[in-house]
Length: 271
Image 1 (cartoon, rainbow, N blue to C red):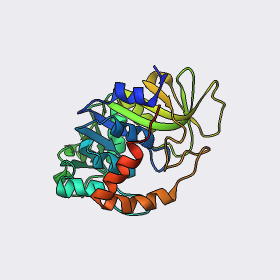
Image 2 (image 1 turned 90 degrees about the vertical axis):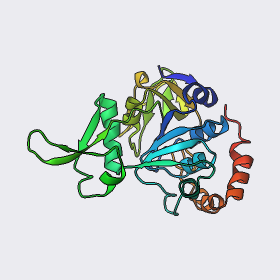
Image 3 (image 1 turned 135 degrees about the vertical axis):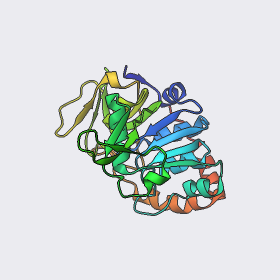
């Protein structure tokens, strides 16, 4: 467990057509390089899961990787819409995209239930919203102790969970700090997993506020410096705001997107 390998080999071994794949990270430590490697390897019919899909999922959807998106909020943070996502939902380009929408709390609790080996999670957050009528994986449930009407959502257990972090040691343990999102939960909930890291080191030095993700929860580790770009990796890189701004224009037009994909992602070679 926690085997150190190349990004290319990790994606080839983990992600197959038709798989359910979660690439998580909240503004920070988003595994963009891993998502782009999925594109390069031509994976299709994926169910993509993510609490806050942003531009890496826009790229994967536009490249034709996805048939379904399970999510809570989607957008280009601080800029606007995800135009490849919108085009797929509204116009079926390049392929039709099914959506399953939840709240942030609902998605987080689904991962927690999956990590705990439970079949579902229970929460109050959906009561009074129309998501119950729109999303078949949200069901009313009565508390057996108080009679209160609550809502239940099924556990999330992706085939593959992918995150980015700062460091790993050679034994396969991962260290991360800053905004931790649901990194821990998605790794524990997923059947198999990949962590891309900024660097592999001999020893993980103690760091205030850091979290250790143990080797037994991780299938593969790949050293990918800059693997979160254009998001940031605290202590290693800053957010590339210009990239997010530029993406809005690129993603609005099918031809511009197709040219960008061919000229950048498909030309890049990741070891």
